[in-house]
Image 1 (cartoon, one colour):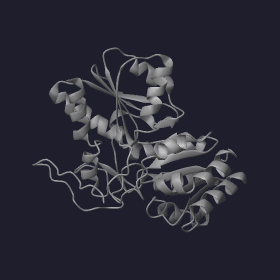
Image 2 (cartoon, rainbow, N blue to C red):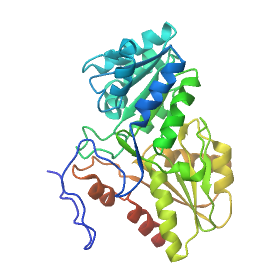
Image 3 (spheres, helix red, strand yellow):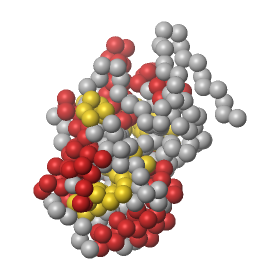
Image 4 (cartoon, helix red, strand yellow):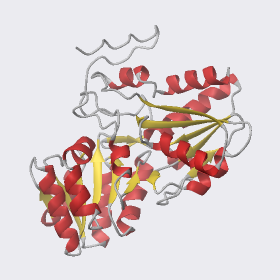
Length: 337
């Protein structure tokens, strides 16, 4: 039996219904619909080699937009993820650039060996784009890809990308298409928040970007946790805590130079925040880098626990597992004393 979800503090009502596909946008936050689907259509208009493929999840990976625009370049493989990636490998061998979409759990767990043997080992130019990364589904462990980054970054030759918002997804699609070789990219779908455009941000594959500077705390983050880190940094200003945010969208290869430079700045607490288990993701990658290079700093990790997560409403689960904005602020203030 799953443990009961912890009750929320008074004055902060949370949704209590579960949703398989739920928005991560806060109330009133700017969003953009289906950025991946529209970006892939724009790319395909310029490049006839681009294909869209899915395993019965076109509507839930925003690939239905591509299918409408380019029905002759859309492949619906049915509920057969191994077949999806095997076929994508074959099409890549013939000179095409397939974008294969499914849920992150199905790519990273169900079809891992096929991806390993037919795509990564063969260095095939397949772009694996996967929805429901980390804790972005309320349906429990069967749909929560809490360990996908650890699995994919362990695969030789695989580039791993964890974009923050709609603005970054739009820019990442042509960037990963330009990279020759396999790429695994996490996908936020549906009504996706817009955040990074306010910071004049431009995505570059393999590059981390300092979005804001600060004297006391440095958040090193990826994916939706960069959005949370930016929100936390603004909230911490009320308590006179000055926080910086280094966004690391490419988990592999890491931008080691940018991370070392930011973490070596003296007197700051370094907090790695990720929507992923604390085992094998960005936090341990950064910790290993700092240890190898002899950079010694106060270091903490915020991520999902090493356990099977509960089902429930996302706002409640994000609070429970410590990846909401409020939870980030509380942890940082505790660590700063």
